[in-house]
Amino acid sequence: METTATPAITFRRFEPGDEIAFRELNEVWIVRHFTLEEPDRKVLGDPANCILKPGGEILMATKDGRSIGCCALLYMEPGVYEVGKMTVHQDFRGLGIGKQLLDAVIGLAKQRGATKLFLESNSKLQDAVHLYEAAGFRHLPPERVHPSPYARSNVHMELLLSE
Image (tube, rainbow, N blue to C red; front, side):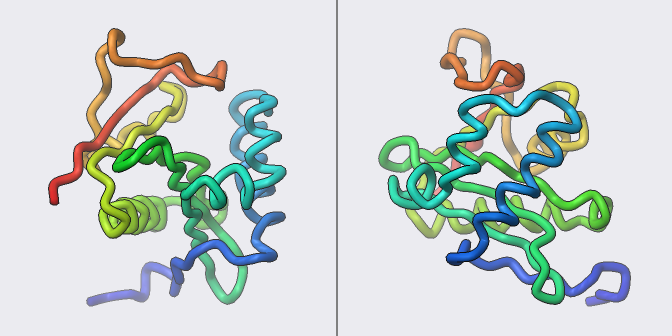
């Protein structure tokens, strides 16, 4: 396998001390495209209690010890998780890291026994929406969309996982 075009990236579970990188990575993309909302502030300000404690996970993408990306797997109900707060630092986009990160999160969800993944996004984030579609996520019809805590959410997708 040729690896010269892609920097050596490590994917690992969230560790104490990752809170600042998780918050900063996400704030950058949210503020660039939208407005930081109260639900963002809550989750980004306390990922341990908002994501990990209820049964979720966070994966961090690192290069040379530097956090360059992240993605959360938020517990919704038995067998169902939400994929959220996914981003890759601007300097590392276009290298396939987002796809690798999403694949790793889907694999982690399967390990945890998930049967369905859900996500929310925005149509303005075309690259992200295409990434989700390529991974097998399908758009939900309007009658299956639940109200979102985020004003920016206008794309709702799910991925059914086979066992």
